[in-house]
Image (cartoon, rainbow, N blue to C red; front, side, top):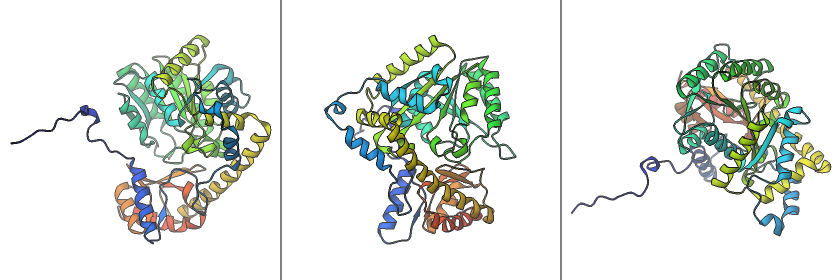
Length: 411
C-alpha cells in the first residue's frame, strides 16, 4: 500500500540548500589539508595572518573581557545602546555635518542592516537593484523577505562603472515598481575588489537625483570593507551628500571586519535624510523591525565597540592595530597586482580590500581546474572570487599560476 508523505514545510521553503556554497568549499579545502595535501584556500571571507590564524585586534579582546558583567548579560535596548548608536555616527562621519541629518539602529552585523533596508524600503514582490557582480547573500536576504533582485551591468567597455547601465536599471524600476532600493557595495566591492573614484561617485549621485525626482529612491551603501579602503575610505561621503537632494541614503556599518569580530554580530544601519520628520519616521520603522526580527542585538558587543569608538586611548591603540592589518592586506594586494599583470590575468581595478575577481567565461570550470591544483577560489557567474584576505603574500605566485591555468582552460 503506497503512502504519500505530507511535508509541513511551505512550498517556498522546500529544497533549499542548508549551507552557503562558500562554506562548503572552505570545508572541502580544510578536509584535504587535514589529510596532508598542500592546499591553498582562498575562499575564506575573513582576514587571516600569514600563519593561517584569524587576525584579531588584541585591544578588542581585552575590552570585551573587561565589559563582561551582569549588566551586559541583560537585554540591550531594542534599537541598540544609545552610546553605541551615537558612537557609530560620530565615527562614520568623522565630524562631517552629515551626522546631523542621520540616525542609526543596531543590527546583527552588516547582514542585519541589509535585511532592515530590504523590508523597510521595498514592498513585498519588489526587487532591489545592484551590480551584476554582487555578494551572493543579497539574493537570499531579498528572497527570504518576499522580495527579489535585479542587476545592471557593472563594468563598461573601459572597465569603469557602467553609469549608462545603472541609469537604465533605475528607469526600469521606477517605471515598473514605482520605487527603487539601489545597493552599492563600495569601497572594496565584494567580490570584485573595485572602488569607485570621486568622479564615479559624482556620476552616480547625478543619476540617482535624476530618477529620485520621479519616484522614492533609496541608496544603500554596504560599507563592510570601508576601513580597508585606503584612500577610498571616505570617498562615498560627497556622493551621499549630493544624493540627499532627492534620495534617502543608508549605510550598512559593521564591526565584523574593522574590529575583527565576525562572531559578535555587531553592526548598524545608518539612515540619512534631508527632512527631519521623515528621518523620525524611518527611525520608528527600523526600531519596529528590530523588535519583529532579532529583538535585541549583542549587549556585550555593543558595549565594547562603543568604548573602542569613543575612548581616546582605545581609539588610538585599536587604530594602530587596524593600520597594521591594513598594511598586511595591502602587501598581498600589491603582490597580487604585480603577478597578475605579468600573467595577463583579466581583473578589474583593484586598489585594496579583501577580495578580487578574475574574469572567466566559465567561473565554475575555472574553479574546478584550480581545485585540481589544490587551490580553492569561489566560482561566480563570469568570474572567480579570490580572497586575498586569507592568502599569505608568499603564496600569491602559486595562486596566480593556478588562476592563469584555470582561465586558460576555458578560453
